[in-house]
Image (cartoon, rainbow, N blue to C red):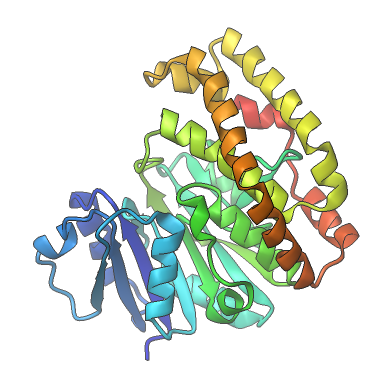
Length: 334
């Protein structure tokens, strides 16, 4: 049995997938299998006739989402580790070797974060950080890779390029299918950290990523899902004191969004310049809250279950989150 299963969900199933798979063929660590989960509903990957002895394909008749696709790959394998990789990402040759080495160093490390780059000069992700209203952000996004060149413990990895210990996935139950797209890696990371698992960032494990290809850099779908899933994550995971103050924190973030939008800057301005109608943003926020309210009973039941299995107390978990917080203004600005 291979040591690692690399699971790659794909929807577009275009030429980028071939570039991704070719980068895996060049890995210095060879004890792995590749599972591509085809969400196209049209058998697009099989139609490419890609020949590789380590490739397995799982085909879905509909798009089941990112987290559910990863769960399919994880459950179809028996490997000690599960690596997740976006279909528009290209791995450096030592990527897997370095991630596995970091995980093997300490059995308490259940998650390992890559250094994900947009280019040699611009960073996409060095892990994930969190704000007081549950908004998550790629750590170091837009910065220089050299500014995040030191290995360290981080809150959690970006699911675009991460390594997860199977024992950890078994322990917390994998990704939450209902997130569909966005924030599912943050939700998994919080549940794992609350169970006492550590996350290690490995800056030498480099990935090059075409940012936000799946749903666009700033689309209505993305705006809706990010806001809705933030609410899912809050109710499911946040300690009681932080959950009570989260609505006020959200109002502060909305203020900063408006502040930067007036100046033509920030996330809200990105939405407008990408072709989105800025007057639609309040309606999307209201719809996100309505969808979360409709599922509140289920979310609260999930919260009780997560808390019943927690290793860290609320105070300990709150302290952990505070060590990896970013400001609400920074969330709106970038």
